Image 1: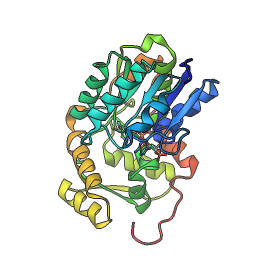
Image 2: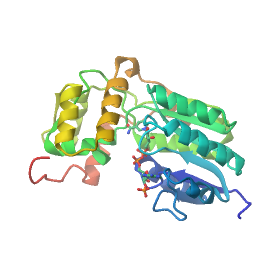
Image 3: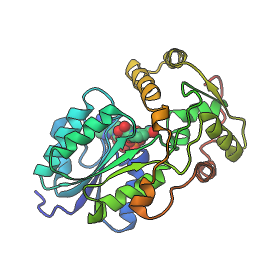
Image 4: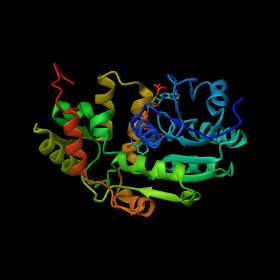
Length: 282
Ligand SMILES: NC(=O)c1ccc[n+]([C@@H]2O[C@H](COP(=O)([O-])OP(=O)(O)OC[C@H]3O[C@@H](n4cnc5c(N)ncnc54)[C@H](OP(=O)(O)O)[C@@H]3O)[C@@H](O)[C@H]2O)c1
């Protein structure tokens, strides 16, 4: 057993946010372990026997749950993992949470109850969902068909989130803080589609659909029932006027402004993510 406890464990370390956290920590020369099923040792939320080996020699954790803190069982798993982390010498936890999700706040409380040295990253809808996750296919099809109405959303650039996570994992001033993280402006999905079209140089428009239409279209594309349920919950609960306001969480944590959507769209376009041509249908 390694008793030094200087390694930083990044759960979901090959995913959208975790990959960015890993890159930043490695660039600083800090010892990092990728927590994923493909990691060494492997870490699997579904197999608790993998948790203790992944925590060996670890002093702090970037805790992102997969697939979402809102799914059944997430609160219990996140709380149990955090308790084990604290017991095994890793009290410092930066928890990725979701803004406007009651389940996410329950997960935050479960970690707080372990007496971890906790920083909560309560994050708004990610900009990168349009280029690195399920909304990419919508963009490539030219139609973002989602049940988001015309509610403005303060999309967050996850490069900002990763910067805050690294600060939380490396600087004691962030212990005990709860950061509500958003971008600098609230955009409707129609605004976002227009910004993506301009940056990508391809036609992209937003087509509002009902929650029921959206669920039916996902089912037609063979999306598993639990994912349909999760997306329906998120669009119903999170894309809501209650969550439309921007916050100054990024500035509070980092002393600088968050990136805006146009900057994100230019950076995503430069990666070629939106250059793909779909062959048939979606
Ligand atoms: N998307 C949003 O707009 C948004 C907003 C706020 C909060 N969030 C929160 O963000 C979190 C997801 O973070 P993310 O987007 O960075 O991750 P992500 O890209 O969705 O996750 C992929 C990562 O999870 C790992 N993974 C998959 N299945 C796993 C399992 N059974 N056990 C352990 N690891 C597993 C993958 O590696 P392997 O395949 O190698 O295991 C990979 O590293 C969720 O908790 C969600 O609630 C999302």
